[in-house]
Amino acid sequence: MTKSSISIGLVLLLFSAMILLSAMSSVTKVRAQLEWEVTATEVIVRTPEFEIHVSKRGGIVAYYLGGAQVLGDTSLAFWGPGWSGFWQTTWEGEITKEPDIEQFEGGVKITTYCRWDIPKGLYFDFITVHRIYESGAVVISYLVKTWEASDFAGAAIFVRYPCDVFKGRYFAAFRGGNLVFEVEKLPEEHEPGSGFWQIQSGVFSVAYISAPGGAINVILAYITPSEIDTELSDEREWGGNEYATKGWIQDLVPKTAGGEANFTWIIFPHTRGGEFNKRAVEIMQLQASAYSYVAKVERIARSAAAKENLAKAKALLPKVLEAICRADLDTAKRYADEAYNYARAAFTIELRRASTLYIIIPLVVCVVVLGWAIRRWARSWKAERIEG
Image (tube, rainbow, N blue to C red; front, side, top):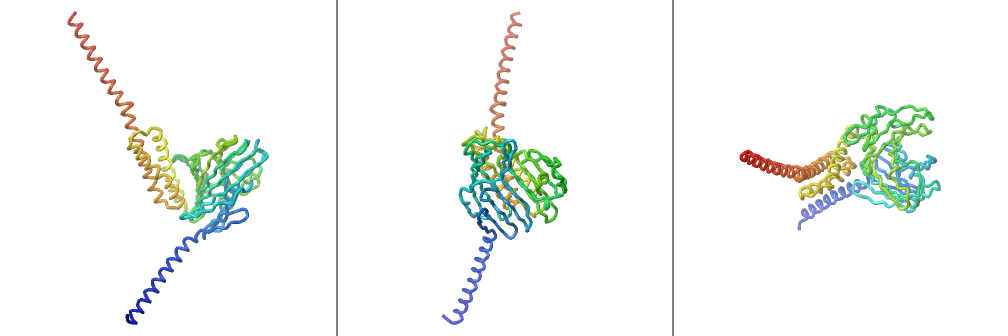
């Protein structure tokens, strides 16, 4: 082997090593986009864009985007009997187990464990799963178990929005593709103790606070249950400095020992603009329509073709929200369209089958019987005429 060939080999080896090291550092950088720190009371998740403080008791204590706090306590909240006392899981209760933290592709999952033993009549165990995506979306899912008979006047999915960030912003809420209510401008001023704290209310599935340009927007979407009677309020009435959405769930939380309930929602602060909000809402409403068809078909599905389409729709639907949480609306729209088409096709197939079985066949039978009766009557009438 000549010296020149050895030199060329060394150069190629060095070049390959440089490419490999570059690739490795790139992968490390991608994986390092999302980091977390565990403190005595919180798990703090950070990326270059946001910082989220998750309570070890469950829920978000604070959410910072671009250095500004855009969310306050975001969790389940309870009011005691006769509306005496107020508690949120972010700051109340005993931490019964240290959080489980698991990284997934594009995010991290944090599971917290907490018990309430409040003499006012609140005896719950909370297991809360927080799926935090690199996009900034957070899916919060509570399992509430009543370990002793409990009593309370109110319970809500409670989200706080700092007034300093969102005053004067546009708020809109939607249900089934229709606008439930809108607030052109969130109140800039409020007189505490005035008695006028409710800004708007209604049953909705998804809502957003919209802002122009690169300003901060927030999307709120209920998953379980999919629609909740929600109050948009001004917490400055009681000395705070936030607006709040309170999704009332007191009728869904069990009061008897041994009962349990699940609540899941998405909260997604971002700076992607108002068009991102509108597209996300449109996709979620299309998904909701697909779920509606699925629910109808599941009760009546008999044919193999309908069941096959139904299975395809059900497999696609969870992928819609996953894509939205990753801020990939093009993929989310494709999944939603496909799921809707499969679900609608399944419904159409079953509708035709049911129409054939319960309308067309009975109608044909009726026509045949009627024809037979007419012919028999005609023969009888003709015979009577001849005899006459």
